[in-house]
Length: 114
Image (cartoon, rainbow, N blue to C red; front, side, top):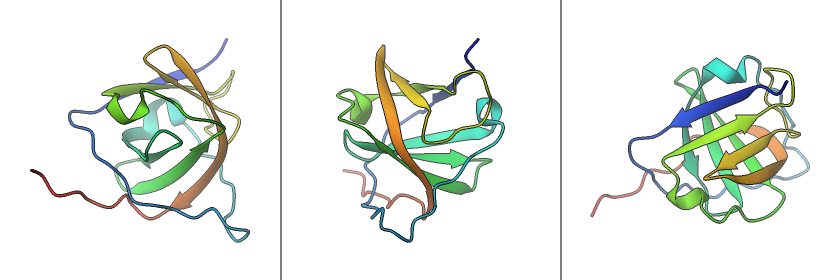
């Protein structure tokens, strides 16, 4: 049985750019089904995930996830474990969006409210 976490968000925000270079180390996030507290879309191809209210991770997707910039909540499928890694899948408005990379990084840039 697959483990799925649902993360809700009151208001969406655009995120800053992250470079996944050769020095970026892939990570695993334990207890993903209860420790992911927030997310921010980074366009259609990536997402920032906040863990325990303070650590941020940048997840690159294999391809565009069309509704990600507009999502108020996302699901995370970890395939039988509760550890988030680059093999996980995001569920966004019924669309399955496969991760290709997960690295620890800086928080997303804040945007100005209009």
